[in-house]
Length: 98
Length: 468
Image 1 (spheres, chains in turn blue, yellow):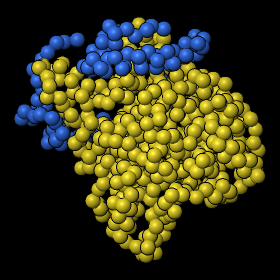
Image 2 (image 1 turned 60 degrees about the horizontal axis):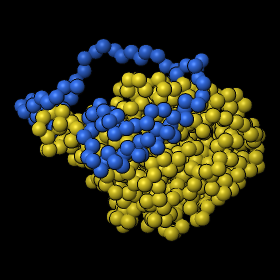
Image 3 (image 1 turned 45 degrees about the vertical axis):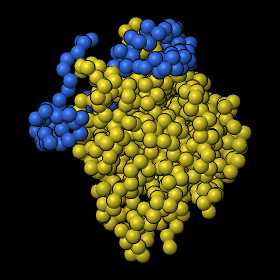
């Protein structure tokens, strides 16, 4: 299995939107490699004929009635906002995509 | 004078029915007990004013969203968050007149086995405050055991109800996946998360389960489940009890734990059950790695919502929006959620998905099949719940893998969506040992029957020795 290098860790942290500090990177790099080495045990089994389980119950398609009903009020929806502007959540401007 | 250490929920109900105590008085008695013992134990993150009503008090794990009551999931990223709606389980408790005493401590986002990952500091085990109460629901378990609530709700992803119940000497049920609504619960790993009761007795546990179980239109993963039968019998005649070798002979199991569990198995025989050995050859060795791929993968997706935009913590240390997301999440999450988000993001990322997450989902099928095969011959399986008694605070915090191993025996049945009940079965070194009863899906009533009969036969005193 792939060893997590510093470069790969930074890439994964970016995908997860985490800005890790240098001390965290040092600590996490070793721990993540230990964890991945342990969980890689799943590769020992040949399961090419086994279907995956994504859900423990044998249930399919649950349908609800398509009837309008009240949802959260604007005030409730914004009640916990770190910053609001009028009836909107306010966030800092843009920034890099990806 | 009411002794909250001894009073069961059933006993409290009798007192209320006979008008020997009012709902207000009962609530006040628990608040007084919290005032006296919680400064030492730290079971609660938030204690409520009496909301009124006629019923019995209850404590809720702080992953359960409660309208108007702060809900933090043990995380700094949700500090100050006050839900604007109730989780369905909270609504059902209120509809039964249950009065919310407060919100109990938990490992951050229910990720942990000791409650030491809480951003607000650990909970201490009422039997020995130098030891952990287990986790993630250590607050609920310790509160019930220390008489700071007659019963409580917890949540269980890989053992977070069963394991703390074992370490604190409670009865705790992880119900069959899909029987209890998760609407309004802070999500961790959605194919595994279940809400369930923690109580002093099997009958209390069964009753509380009947309050919260049932289909909920707000949670499409819920199904109708059989009506709950409160257990009364004291024999196990006609019942087939399976003892899975791998979960009873694992080298991680302490001798004192093994001895107490073997005694309980012997009692099953004496109560008339037919006891036999069985095997779950791959469920233990592969259960833990399988869980620690699937749960982090789902967590990495569920925790993406904490972005500093709609609720919770926002970093003020940011130049633009992307920067704001990254700093908010770095400053708001503790180490364990970060580890799991990173492992999960990695396991789901392009090029690694099939080898990790895809393979783990197939292992999950293997584990489910092994259990299904065992249930062709047995009605219930018995194992230790935790391989060890409560461990020292700080004993496993430096080594994530050592902490993960705490759930070695609770995880396999969780992966298969099966119900599991912890019943205290004795003491080892003066600390509680838990017996895990596992049933087929929707067999909660069987677990209650077995648990109740064993409870009578074992005669475990659920009050911590140092508090008697």
